[in-house]
Length: 119
Image (cartoon, rainbow, N blue to C red):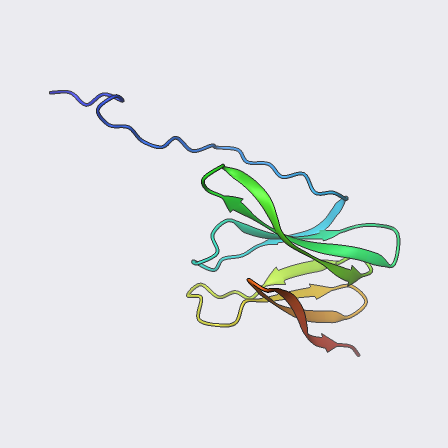
């Protein structure tokens, strides 16, 4: 007896996903937390003081990237980086640089500034 697609239905996944940010993207970083698959932080480049950081993630039911959170950031982010937590054991932290180094904590209730470091 041979296996056919009718007998063995598999969910077909896209090979290419896209997300269009509402502004020019200057920095981005993938999260590697196992409980937050396919999550990306994007930093804007707007030639003004007020810029944004947006957290997007893949909705696996619709196969679309959706904005989950957006927060204000002074000046464009020159670098965005998630905590390198492969086990999901630490708080969900995101670091951004621009005029200063900022550490943010993200969660279901939003994103808040944890620490501001300057020289």
